[in-house]
Image 1 (cartoon, rainbow over the protein chains, first blue to last red):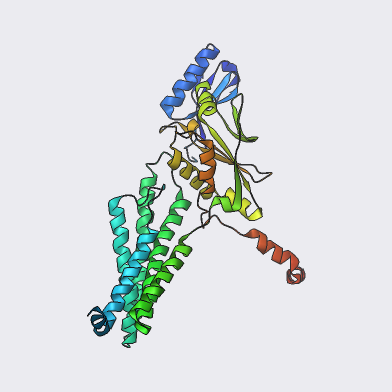
Image 2 (tube, chains in turn purple, red):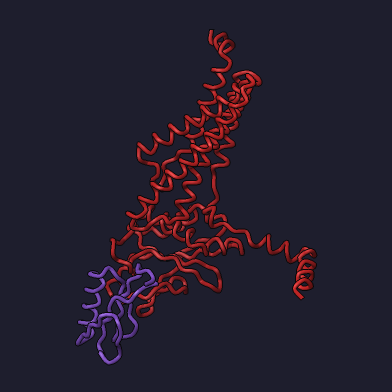
Length: 63
Length: 317
């Protein structure tokens, strides 16, 4: 099962939970952070909606 | 002079002829093609040496049996033992290499290759045995003719089926709908970042594989078969990706309604027509082939099935 490695968002109130949450000030910063996290974590960035990206580790096993 | 020698060394002639044809069979079947294995010179020597041993074992058995030395048949079981080792060896090597590939072969493909390596050695034994038998029972030149015929048979048995036999392959457009990527209407994945989307739109090749019948539908759904398709595509055209970039990995997704398989690949050399041809030539993996259609039809048409069912119901009731 894939695992969410990080969350990048514009609105902090929309998200909570176990993964590290990065709050960006604008759309440009949002994409920049997502790109940076994708490259450093060797993960894939997926766009949930206009203000929310999840960085997903697809190699992660259960547990 | 030579004829006289052959007459006086009949057993030796049989063994030599058999070994020669056994080795020739292994050599003919040992092709280095796009799968790049065994292109390595040492891998080649290992397989040729085993081919020669196979030929020698197969051909020695016949003269031994002619001289009432029946224990010679145990030679062949020794050979079988030896070739199971070959299968293990190939499996271990390929599995070890597979971890270093950008697009791995997958366990099913490796298993298929290992079985083929073992099987080809048996074909070499068979060729040697038949040649030796013909040379012993008749004369040496009959052995040569039978050997040539057995070589043809071995080549025929070696040939496997490919995807083109069971499915239609065509190009399909790649559509980007926001972060979502579709190939021919089949959802592939969600790509969050704009640079990755641009790369996919620019360099991606979309292919649609349509199964010809219910059997091939099951075959195409097999994960090992899908990985084999992706591996062959990647080997022939290269991959536009690096380690740790999961968004650019080649993908194959199934349409559950139609059974069609959509393939999204990012080849280094973008030649869609050749890619279609390459997918047609992907070997069908033995482990992926299923034949549910004939089995189900037999059960539906045969009256015995209904009787069995009513009997089972009666027993349960």
